[in-house]
Length: 481
Image (tube, rainbow, N blue to C red; front, side, top):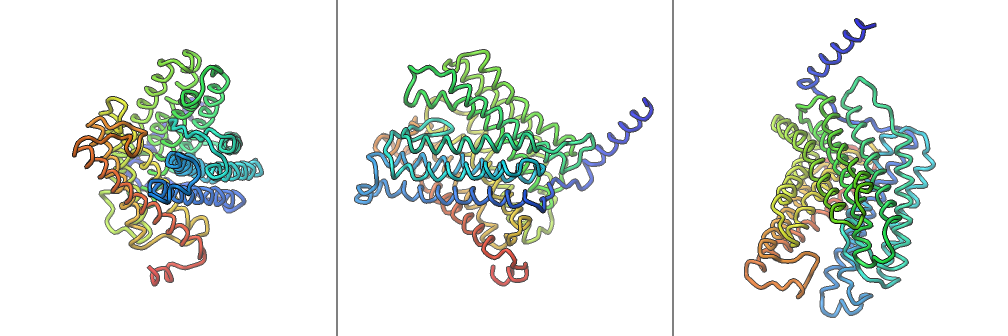
Protein backbone atom coordinates (compact mmCIF):
# COMPACT_ATOMS: atom_id res chain seq x y z
CA UNK A 1 0.00 0.00 0.00
CA UNK A 2 2.82 2.42 0.87
CA UNK A 3 4.56 1.66 -2.42
CA UNK A 4 1.33 2.31 -4.32
CA UNK A 5 0.76 5.66 -2.58
CA UNK A 6 4.34 6.77 -3.20
CA UNK A 7 4.20 5.85 -6.85
CA UNK A 8 0.84 7.58 -7.23
CA UNK A 9 2.18 10.73 -5.54
CA UNK A 10 5.24 10.69 -7.81
CA UNK A 11 3.05 10.46 -10.89
CA UNK A 12 0.88 13.35 -9.65
CA UNK A 13 3.92 15.52 -9.01
CA UNK A 14 5.27 14.70 -12.43
CA UNK A 15 1.97 15.54 -14.14
CA UNK A 16 1.71 18.75 -12.12
CA UNK A 17 5.19 19.86 -13.14
CA UNK A 18 4.52 19.09 -16.77
CA UNK A 19 1.25 20.99 -16.69
CA UNK A 20 3.12 24.23 -16.12
CA UNK A 21 4.57 24.07 -19.61
CA UNK A 22 1.81 22.09 -21.33
CA UNK A 23 -1.29 23.67 -22.84
CA UNK A 24 -3.57 23.73 -19.79
CA UNK A 25 -7.18 24.61 -20.63
CA UNK A 26 -8.95 26.44 -17.84
CA UNK A 27 -12.60 26.05 -18.78
CA UNK A 28 -15.79 24.48 -17.46
CA UNK A 29 -17.94 22.45 -19.87
CA UNK A 30 -21.41 23.92 -20.36
CA UNK A 31 -24.10 21.40 -19.33
CA UNK A 32 -26.63 20.59 -22.04
CA UNK A 33 -29.66 20.23 -19.77
CA UNK A 34 -31.89 22.39 -17.57
CA UNK A 35 -28.83 23.99 -15.95
CA UNK A 36 -28.04 25.68 -19.25
CA UNK A 37 -31.48 27.32 -19.37
CA UNK A 38 -31.11 28.39 -15.73
CA UNK A 39 -27.74 29.97 -16.53
CA UNK A 40 -29.36 31.84 -19.43
CA UNK A 41 -32.05 33.11 -17.07
CA UNK A 42 -29.46 34.58 -14.71
CA UNK A 43 -27.65 36.11 -17.69
CA UNK A 44 -30.87 37.83 -18.74
CA UNK A 45 -31.40 39.19 -15.24
CA UNK A 46 -27.89 40.64 -15.34
CA UNK A 47 -28.44 42.26 -18.74
CA UNK A 48 -31.79 43.72 -17.64
CA UNK A 49 -30.08 45.10 -14.52
CA UNK A 50 -27.46 46.81 -16.68
CA UNK A 51 -30.19 48.26 -18.91
CA UNK A 52 -31.95 49.60 -15.81
CA UNK A 53 -28.68 50.98 -14.53
CA UNK A 54 -28.21 52.78 -17.85
CA UNK A 55 -31.68 54.31 -17.57
CA UNK A 56 -30.91 55.62 -14.10
CA UNK A 57 -27.57 57.01 -15.31
CA UNK A 58 -29.55 59.08 -17.84
CA UNK A 59 -31.91 60.15 -15.05
CA UNK A 60 -28.82 61.29 -13.13
CA UNK A 61 -28.15 63.74 -15.92
CA UNK A 62 -31.82 64.74 -16.10
CA UNK A 63 -31.91 65.40 -12.37
CA UNK A 64 -29.25 68.09 -12.87
CA UNK A 65 -30.90 69.62 -15.95
CA UNK A 66 -32.87 72.85 -15.26
CA UNK A 67 -36.55 72.47 -16.02
CA UNK A 68 -36.40 68.69 -16.42
CA UNK A 69 -35.51 68.11 -12.76
CA UNK A 70 -38.76 69.77 -11.66
CA UNK A 71 -40.89 66.96 -13.11
CA UNK A 72 -38.91 64.16 -11.44
CA UNK A 73 -40.25 62.74 -8.15
CA UNK A 74 -38.61 63.76 -4.89
CA UNK A 75 -36.52 66.77 -3.94
CA UNK A 76 -33.23 64.86 -4.14
CA UNK A 77 -33.72 62.63 -7.17
CA UNK A 78 -30.01 62.82 -8.04
CA UNK A 79 -29.07 60.66 -5.05
CA UNK A 80 -32.11 58.47 -5.57
CA UNK A 81 -31.08 57.74 -9.16
CA UNK A 82 -27.48 57.24 -8.08
CA UNK A 83 -28.50 54.62 -5.50
CA UNK A 84 -30.55 52.63 -8.03
CA UNK A 85 -27.77 52.97 -10.62
CA UNK A 86 -25.19 51.54 -8.19
CA UNK A 87 -27.39 48.73 -6.85
CA UNK A 88 -28.36 47.56 -10.34
CA UNK A 89 -24.90 47.85 -11.91
CA UNK A 90 -23.01 46.27 -9.02
CA UNK A 91 -25.19 44.26 -6.64
CA UNK A 92 -27.76 42.79 -9.06
CA UNK A 93 -25.35 42.44 -12.02
CA UNK A 94 -22.71 40.71 -9.90
CA UNK A 95 -25.20 38.36 -8.24
CA UNK A 96 -26.67 37.52 -11.66
CA UNK A 97 -23.25 36.61 -13.06
CA UNK A 98 -22.59 34.53 -9.94
CA UNK A 99 -25.93 32.79 -10.46
CA UNK A 100 -25.01 32.03 -14.07
CA UNK A 101 -21.63 30.55 -13.11
CA UNK A 102 -23.00 28.61 -10.13
CA UNK A 103 -25.69 27.13 -12.40
CA UNK A 104 -23.07 26.05 -14.94
CA UNK A 105 -20.80 24.65 -12.25
CA UNK A 106 -23.39 22.90 -10.08
CA UNK A 107 -24.94 19.48 -10.36
CA UNK A 108 -28.54 18.94 -11.40
CA UNK A 109 -29.75 18.58 -7.81
CA UNK A 110 -32.13 21.26 -6.59
CA UNK A 111 -32.77 22.73 -10.03
CA UNK A 112 -36.25 23.86 -8.94
CA UNK A 113 -34.75 25.87 -6.09
CA UNK A 114 -32.51 27.52 -8.69
CA UNK A 115 -35.54 28.76 -10.60
CA UNK A 116 -37.17 29.91 -7.35
CA UNK A 117 -34.02 31.90 -6.54
CA UNK A 118 -34.06 33.49 -10.00
CA UNK A 119 -37.74 34.37 -9.68
CA UNK A 120 -37.33 35.98 -6.26
CA UNK A 121 -34.23 37.91 -7.34
CA UNK A 122 -36.03 39.17 -10.46
CA UNK A 123 -39.10 40.27 -8.48
CA UNK A 124 -36.91 41.99 -5.88
CA UNK A 125 -34.99 43.81 -8.63
CA UNK A 126 -38.24 45.07 -10.19
CA UNK A 127 -39.56 46.30 -6.84
CA UNK A 128 -36.31 48.13 -6.06
CA UNK A 129 -36.34 49.74 -9.51
CA UNK A 130 -39.86 51.15 -9.25
CA UNK A 131 -39.37 52.35 -5.67
CA UNK A 132 -37.83 55.59 -6.95
CA UNK A 133 -41.13 56.54 -8.59
CA UNK A 134 -43.86 55.17 -6.30
CA UNK A 135 -42.55 55.96 -2.83
CA UNK A 136 -40.48 58.70 -1.23
CA UNK A 137 -37.67 58.04 1.17
CA UNK A 138 -34.33 59.39 2.29
CA UNK A 139 -31.45 58.38 -0.02
CA UNK A 140 -28.77 56.83 2.20
CA UNK A 141 -25.35 56.46 0.56
CA UNK A 142 -24.21 53.53 2.72
CA UNK A 143 -21.13 51.59 1.69
CA UNK A 144 -21.62 48.38 -0.35
CA UNK A 145 -25.44 48.59 -0.53
CA UNK A 146 -26.82 52.15 -0.70
CA UNK A 147 -30.54 52.26 0.11
CA UNK A 148 -33.69 54.32 -0.20
CA UNK A 149 -35.18 54.43 3.26
CA UNK A 150 -38.74 53.65 2.19
CA UNK A 151 -40.90 50.55 2.50
CA UNK A 152 -41.00 49.77 -1.23
CA UNK A 153 -37.22 49.71 -1.70
CA UNK A 154 -36.63 47.80 1.54
CA UNK A 155 -39.24 45.22 0.48
CA UNK A 156 -37.53 44.79 -2.88
CA UNK A 157 -34.12 44.48 -1.24
CA UNK A 158 -35.42 41.84 1.18
CA UNK A 159 -37.02 39.82 -1.65
CA UNK A 160 -33.80 40.08 -3.66
CA UNK A 161 -31.82 39.03 -0.58
CA UNK A 162 -34.13 36.04 -0.08
CA UNK A 163 -33.57 34.99 -3.68
CA UNK A 164 -29.82 35.39 -3.21
CA UNK A 165 -30.01 33.26 -0.08
CA UNK A 166 -31.81 30.45 -1.92
CA UNK A 167 -29.23 30.75 -4.71
CA UNK A 168 -26.34 30.39 -2.25
CA UNK A 169 -27.94 27.43 -0.49
CA UNK A 170 -28.41 25.64 -3.80
CA UNK A 171 -24.83 26.48 -4.71
CA UNK A 172 -23.59 24.88 -1.50
CA UNK A 173 -25.59 21.68 -1.92
CA UNK A 174 -25.05 21.29 -5.67
CA UNK A 175 -21.31 22.01 -5.72
CA UNK A 176 -19.48 19.28 -7.66
CA UNK A 177 -16.74 17.24 -6.03
CA UNK A 178 -13.17 18.19 -6.91
CA UNK A 179 -11.02 15.07 -6.92
CA UNK A 180 -7.36 14.60 -6.14
CA UNK A 181 -6.43 14.72 -9.81
CA UNK A 182 -6.67 18.43 -10.65
CA UNK A 183 -7.04 19.68 -14.23
CA UNK A 184 -8.00 23.09 -15.59
CA UNK A 185 -11.73 22.46 -15.26
CA UNK A 186 -11.36 21.21 -11.68
CA UNK A 187 -9.33 24.30 -10.74
CA UNK A 188 -12.07 26.62 -12.02
CA UNK A 189 -14.75 24.52 -10.34
CA UNK A 190 -12.85 24.92 -7.07
CA UNK A 191 -12.80 28.70 -7.52
CA UNK A 192 -16.51 28.88 -8.34
CA UNK A 193 -17.38 26.69 -5.35
CA UNK A 194 -15.12 28.80 -3.12
CA UNK A 195 -17.08 31.88 -4.17
CA UNK A 196 -20.28 30.19 -2.95
CA UNK A 197 -18.64 29.67 0.47
CA UNK A 198 -17.62 33.34 0.60
CA UNK A 199 -21.19 34.35 -0.25
CA UNK A 200 -22.58 32.10 2.49
CA UNK A 201 -20.31 33.81 5.01
CA UNK A 202 -21.44 37.20 3.69
CA UNK A 203 -25.10 36.28 4.23
CA UNK A 204 -24.23 35.06 7.72
CA UNK A 205 -22.56 38.41 8.42
CA UNK A 206 -25.58 40.39 7.20
CA UNK A 207 -27.85 38.37 9.47
CA UNK A 208 -25.47 38.63 12.41
CA UNK A 209 -25.30 42.41 12.07
CA UNK A 210 -29.09 42.68 11.84
CA UNK A 211 -29.60 40.63 15.00
CA UNK A 212 -26.96 42.37 17.11
CA UNK A 213 -27.60 46.00 16.10
CA UNK A 214 -29.19 48.06 18.86
CA UNK A 215 -32.42 49.98 18.29
CA UNK A 216 -30.72 53.23 19.30
CA UNK A 217 -28.81 53.35 16.00
CA UNK A 218 -30.76 54.65 13.00
CA UNK A 219 -30.39 56.33 9.64
CA UNK A 220 -27.11 56.16 7.77
CA UNK A 221 -25.18 54.80 10.76
CA UNK A 222 -27.57 51.84 10.96
CA UNK A 223 -27.19 50.81 7.31
CA UNK A 224 -23.45 51.48 7.33
CA UNK A 225 -22.95 49.02 10.20
CA UNK A 226 -25.54 46.58 8.85
CA UNK A 227 -23.80 46.16 5.50
CA UNK A 228 -20.15 46.59 6.55
CA UNK A 229 -19.20 43.03 7.51
CA UNK A 230 -21.23 41.25 4.83
CA UNK A 231 -20.19 43.80 2.21
CA UNK A 232 -16.53 43.08 2.89
CA UNK A 233 -17.14 39.33 2.71
CA UNK A 234 -18.87 39.75 -0.65
CA UNK A 235 -15.67 41.27 -2.05
CA UNK A 236 -14.06 37.84 -1.69
CA UNK A 237 -16.90 36.39 -3.79
CA UNK A 238 -16.36 38.90 -6.59
CA UNK A 239 -12.57 38.54 -6.42
CA UNK A 240 -12.76 34.75 -6.70
CA UNK A 241 -15.14 34.94 -9.65
CA UNK A 242 -12.92 37.55 -11.29
CA UNK A 243 -9.88 35.26 -10.96
CA UNK A 244 -11.91 32.38 -12.40
CA UNK A 245 -12.91 34.66 -15.29
CA UNK A 246 -9.29 35.70 -15.87
CA UNK A 247 -8.06 32.11 -16.06
CA UNK A 248 -11.00 31.10 -18.26
CA UNK A 249 -10.54 34.07 -20.61
CA UNK A 250 -6.79 33.49 -20.76
CA UNK A 251 -7.28 29.96 -22.03
CA UNK A 252 -10.12 31.01 -24.34
CA UNK A 253 -8.05 33.67 -26.14
CA UNK A 254 -4.96 31.46 -26.45
CA UNK A 255 -2.75 32.72 -23.60
CA UNK A 256 -0.64 29.78 -22.42
CA UNK A 257 -0.86 29.64 -18.64
CA UNK A 258 2.33 29.50 -16.58
CA UNK A 259 0.28 28.21 -13.65
CA UNK A 260 -0.43 24.54 -13.19
CA UNK A 261 -3.98 23.64 -12.16
CA UNK A 262 -2.72 22.78 -8.66
CA UNK A 263 -1.00 26.14 -8.33
CA UNK A 264 -4.17 27.86 -9.51
CA UNK A 265 -6.15 26.02 -6.83
CA UNK A 266 -3.61 27.15 -4.24
CA UNK A 267 -3.96 30.79 -5.31
CA UNK A 268 -7.75 30.55 -5.23
CA UNK A 269 -7.57 28.99 -1.78
CA UNK A 270 -5.47 31.97 -0.62
CA UNK A 271 -8.16 34.30 -2.01
CA UNK A 272 -10.78 32.45 0.04
CA UNK A 273 -8.85 32.01 3.29
CA UNK A 274 -9.13 35.55 4.64
CA UNK A 275 -12.93 35.54 4.44
CA UNK A 276 -12.92 33.32 7.55
CA UNK A 277 -11.74 36.36 9.51
CA UNK A 278 -15.34 37.60 9.14
CA UNK A 279 -16.97 35.34 11.79
CA UNK A 280 -13.98 35.96 14.10
CA UNK A 281 -14.59 39.72 13.82
CA UNK A 282 -18.15 39.21 15.01
CA UNK A 283 -17.08 36.99 17.90
CA UNK A 284 -14.24 39.26 19.01
CA UNK A 285 -15.79 42.74 18.78
CA UNK A 286 -19.15 44.46 18.83
CA UNK A 287 -20.39 45.36 15.34
CA UNK A 288 -20.42 49.07 16.16
CA UNK A 289 -16.76 49.25 17.25
CA UNK A 290 -13.85 50.61 15.27
CA UNK A 291 -11.93 47.38 15.89
CA UNK A 292 -14.68 45.38 14.19
CA UNK A 293 -14.61 47.64 11.12
CA UNK A 294 -10.81 47.66 10.88
CA UNK A 295 -10.55 43.87 11.10
CA UNK A 296 -12.78 43.46 8.04
CA UNK A 297 -10.73 46.04 6.15
CA UNK A 298 -7.46 44.34 7.08
CA UNK A 299 -8.73 40.91 6.00
CA UNK A 300 -9.87 42.23 2.62
CA UNK A 301 -6.55 43.95 1.93
CA UNK A 302 -4.53 40.88 2.89
CA UNK A 303 -6.64 38.15 1.29
CA UNK A 304 -6.88 39.35 -2.27
CA UNK A 305 -3.29 40.40 -2.87
CA UNK A 306 -1.77 36.98 -2.20
CA UNK A 307 -3.73 35.44 -5.06
CA UNK A 308 -4.29 38.23 -7.56
CA UNK A 309 -0.70 39.22 -8.32
CA UNK A 310 0.63 35.70 -9.22
CA UNK A 311 -2.35 34.90 -11.45
CA UNK A 312 -2.18 38.30 -13.17
CA UNK A 313 1.57 38.01 -13.80
CA UNK A 314 1.20 34.49 -15.19
CA UNK A 315 -1.52 35.69 -17.57
CA UNK A 316 0.52 38.72 -18.64
CA UNK A 317 3.37 36.46 -19.73
CA UNK A 318 0.87 34.19 -21.46
CA UNK A 319 -0.71 37.07 -23.36
CA UNK A 320 2.68 38.05 -24.76
CA UNK A 321 2.88 34.74 -26.60
CA UNK A 322 -0.38 35.12 -28.52
CA UNK A 323 0.54 35.44 -32.20
CA UNK A 324 -2.52 35.23 -34.44
CA UNK A 325 -5.71 35.69 -32.40
CA UNK A 326 -8.95 34.80 -34.15
CA UNK A 327 -11.88 37.17 -34.56
CA UNK A 328 -13.59 35.44 -31.62
CA UNK A 329 -10.45 35.70 -29.47
CA UNK A 330 -9.88 39.45 -29.90
CA UNK A 331 -12.81 40.73 -27.76
CA UNK A 332 -11.88 38.26 -25.02
CA UNK A 333 -8.28 39.42 -24.99
CA UNK A 334 -9.38 43.07 -24.91
CA UNK A 335 -11.65 42.41 -21.92
CA UNK A 336 -8.95 40.47 -20.06
CA UNK A 337 -6.27 43.14 -20.57
CA UNK A 338 -8.63 45.98 -19.63
CA UNK A 339 -9.84 44.12 -16.54
CA UNK A 340 -6.35 43.45 -15.20
CA UNK A 341 -5.18 47.01 -15.83
CA UNK A 342 -8.21 48.61 -14.16
CA UNK A 343 -8.06 46.30 -11.16
CA UNK A 344 -4.34 47.02 -10.77
CA UNK A 345 -5.00 50.76 -10.96
CA UNK A 346 -7.65 50.49 -8.27
CA UNK A 347 -5.32 48.51 -6.05
CA UNK A 348 -2.48 51.02 -6.42
CA UNK A 349 -4.82 53.91 -5.63
CA UNK A 350 -5.89 52.10 -2.48
CA UNK A 351 -2.33 52.32 -1.23
CA UNK A 352 -2.30 56.14 -1.36
CA UNK A 353 -5.67 56.81 0.32
CA UNK A 354 -5.48 59.39 3.10
CA UNK A 355 -8.56 61.00 4.57
CA UNK A 356 -12.23 60.87 3.59
CA UNK A 357 -11.97 62.22 0.04
CA UNK A 358 -12.69 61.08 -3.51
CA UNK A 359 -9.57 58.89 -3.60
CA UNK A 360 -11.72 56.28 -1.83
CA UNK A 361 -14.31 55.96 -4.65
CA UNK A 362 -11.42 56.06 -7.14
CA UNK A 363 -10.01 52.96 -5.44
CA UNK A 364 -13.18 50.92 -5.40
CA UNK A 365 -14.31 52.13 -8.84
CA UNK A 366 -11.08 50.76 -10.30
CA UNK A 367 -11.50 47.40 -8.56
CA UNK A 368 -15.23 47.10 -9.27
CA UNK A 369 -14.76 47.98 -12.93
CA UNK A 370 -11.94 45.43 -13.12
CA UNK A 371 -14.42 42.79 -11.97
CA UNK A 372 -17.11 44.09 -14.33
CA UNK A 373 -14.79 43.91 -17.35
CA UNK A 374 -13.83 40.35 -16.47
CA UNK A 375 -17.52 39.42 -16.30
CA UNK A 376 -18.20 41.20 -19.61
CA UNK A 377 -15.44 39.24 -21.31
CA UNK A 378 -16.69 35.96 -19.86
CA UNK A 379 -20.21 36.74 -21.07
CA UNK A 380 -18.79 37.27 -24.58
CA UNK A 381 -17.10 33.87 -24.33
CA UNK A 382 -20.16 32.06 -22.97
CA UNK A 383 -22.76 33.50 -25.34
CA UNK A 384 -22.11 31.02 -28.19
CA UNK A 385 -21.80 28.17 -25.67
CA UNK A 386 -25.26 29.05 -24.36
CA UNK A 387 -26.70 28.90 -27.89
CA UNK A 388 -26.34 32.52 -28.97
CA UNK A 389 -24.36 34.16 -31.74
CA UNK A 390 -20.58 34.51 -31.27
CA UNK A 391 -19.33 38.01 -30.54
CA UNK A 392 -16.95 39.31 -33.19
CA UNK A 393 -16.21 42.57 -34.98
CA UNK A 394 -14.34 45.81 -34.41
CA UNK A 395 -16.97 47.26 -32.09
CA UNK A 396 -16.79 44.21 -29.85
CA UNK A 397 -13.00 44.56 -29.66
CA UNK A 398 -13.20 48.28 -28.96
CA UNK A 399 -15.93 48.05 -26.30
CA UNK A 400 -13.74 46.83 -23.39
CA UNK A 401 -11.09 49.43 -24.22
CA UNK A 402 -13.66 52.26 -24.41
CA UNK A 403 -15.26 51.23 -21.15
CA UNK A 404 -11.92 50.60 -19.45
CA UNK A 405 -10.25 53.79 -20.68
CA UNK A 406 -13.27 55.85 -19.71
CA UNK A 407 -13.24 54.40 -16.20
CA UNK A 408 -9.47 54.94 -16.01
CA UNK A 409 -9.87 58.66 -16.73
CA UNK A 410 -12.76 58.68 -14.27
CA UNK A 411 -10.66 57.35 -11.39
CA UNK A 412 -7.60 59.45 -12.33
CA UNK A 413 -9.80 62.54 -12.14
CA UNK A 414 -11.00 61.42 -8.71
CA UNK A 415 -7.44 60.85 -7.48
CA UNK A 416 -6.39 64.23 -8.83
CA UNK A 417 -9.30 65.94 -7.05
CA UNK A 418 -8.73 63.89 -3.89
CA UNK A 419 -5.28 65.37 -3.67
CA UNK A 420 -6.98 68.75 -3.20
CA UNK A 421 -9.25 67.31 -0.52
CA UNK A 422 -12.50 67.15 -2.55
CA UNK A 423 -14.95 65.22 -0.38
CA UNK A 424 -16.75 62.05 -1.43
CA UNK A 425 -20.52 61.51 -1.73
CA UNK A 426 -21.24 65.15 -2.56
CA UNK A 427 -22.35 66.73 -5.83
CA UNK A 428 -22.98 70.10 -7.43
CA UNK A 429 -22.36 73.15 -5.27
CA UNK A 430 -21.77 70.93 -2.24
CA UNK A 431 -18.41 69.92 -3.72
CA UNK A 432 -17.02 73.45 -3.16
CA UNK A 433 -14.45 73.34 -5.95
CA UNK A 434 -12.13 76.23 -5.12
CA UNK A 435 -9.11 75.91 -7.41
CA UNK A 436 -8.48 75.31 -11.10
CA UNK A 437 -6.87 71.95 -10.27
CA UNK A 438 -10.00 70.76 -8.51
CA UNK A 439 -12.19 71.81 -11.41
CA UNK A 440 -9.92 70.13 -13.97
CA UNK A 441 -9.77 66.94 -11.92
CA UNK A 442 -13.54 66.65 -11.59
CA UNK A 443 -13.89 67.60 -15.27
CA UNK A 444 -11.60 64.72 -16.25
CA UNK A 445 -13.71 62.49 -14.02
CA UNK A 446 -16.86 63.58 -15.88
CA UNK A 447 -15.37 63.01 -19.34
CA UNK A 448 -14.17 59.58 -18.30
CA UNK A 449 -17.55 58.76 -16.83
CA UNK A 450 -19.26 59.71 -20.11
CA UNK A 451 -16.92 57.43 -22.09
CA UNK A 452 -17.58 54.63 -19.61
CA UNK A 453 -21.34 55.04 -20.07
CA UNK A 454 -20.86 54.74 -23.84
CA UNK A 455 -18.79 51.59 -23.31
CA UNK A 456 -21.46 50.11 -21.06
CA UNK A 457 -24.20 50.84 -23.60
CA UNK A 458 -22.10 49.21 -26.33
CA UNK A 459 -21.83 46.06 -24.21
CA UNK A 460 -25.61 45.87 -23.85
CA UNK A 461 -26.09 46.44 -27.59
CA UNK A 462 -23.56 43.73 -28.47
CA UNK A 463 -25.16 41.19 -26.15
CA UNK A 464 -28.67 41.96 -27.39
CA UNK A 465 -27.49 41.64 -31.00
CA UNK A 466 -25.98 38.27 -30.13
CA UNK A 467 -29.13 36.84 -28.55
CA UNK A 468 -31.50 38.10 -31.26
CA UNK A 469 -30.23 35.68 -33.93
CA UNK A 470 -28.92 32.61 -32.09
CA UNK A 471 -28.70 30.45 -35.22
CA UNK A 472 -26.59 32.84 -37.31
CA UNK A 473 -23.36 31.34 -38.58
CA UNK A 474 -19.93 32.89 -38.49
CA UNK A 475 -20.09 33.30 -42.26
CA UNK A 476 -23.22 35.45 -41.97
CA UNK A 477 -21.61 37.44 -39.17
CA UNK A 478 -18.56 38.24 -41.26
CA UNK A 479 -20.83 39.89 -43.82
CA UNK A 480 -22.61 42.00 -41.20
CA UNK A 481 -19.68 43.23 -39.05
